[in-house]
Structures are given as C-alpha cells and as structure tokens.
Length: 126
Image (cartoon, rainbow, N blue to C red; front, side, top):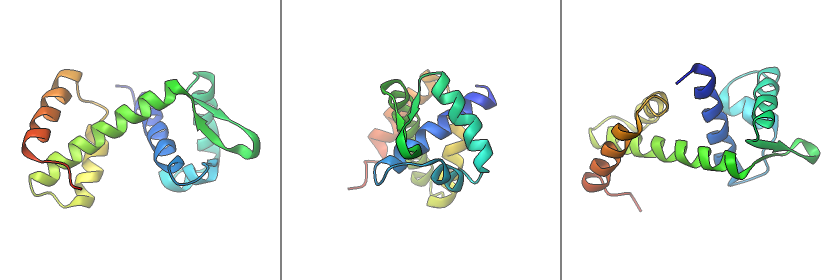
C-alpha cells in the first residue's frame, strides 16, 4: 500500500472514532494525528475529491458511506491486530501503535487468517 493510501485510511479511521463522541473539525484531526492544520487541509481536500468525506457548515467533517466502509474496515483490522499482540503479552500502548503500523499492509488472506485465530483464542473483552 502506498504511503498516501496508508495516511488516507488513518484519517478516515480517526474521523470515524472521533465522530462517535462529537462533531469532528479539522483542528481535532490535526491534534489527534499530530500534524499541522495545513496538512489536514490537504488531506481533507483529497478525501472530499475522492468522495470519502463531506466538510459541511461550521467545518464539520462527515464520512460518506464510501468513507465509512473504509474507516470501519481499517478500525476492525486495527482492533484485531491489537488483540493479537496483547494476547501475546505486548503492553496495550505498544500493541496499539504496532497495530496501527501493521493494519495497512496485510493482505486480505493474512488478515482473515489472523482474525479467525484471534477470535478463537482471544475473546473480545466486555
């Protein structure tokens, strides 16, 4: 996966996570992703042009159905990989960071195999 695609997935995932608790603004993304506001503007423009997000009134960012699908898939890969790493005894903070790196580069076949393993070995926490 290209670095650009990797970054776009991160943006979509973060927008999705943030939108669960409040309306998402560009400044929220800049803070969450630890990037500058101009960097966020560049990526948001690309996401809009490709039909993944809408930036509406008051600069509120909303995922389109197309963007939501990618955000949820990316988030699910992240959660599955984090559970696997934590199951191996990796501390949560490190597992989360490593899962973020791995989630973008896995083939579908490898991810599906890992997901089956994780679901059978490490039940979700309630």
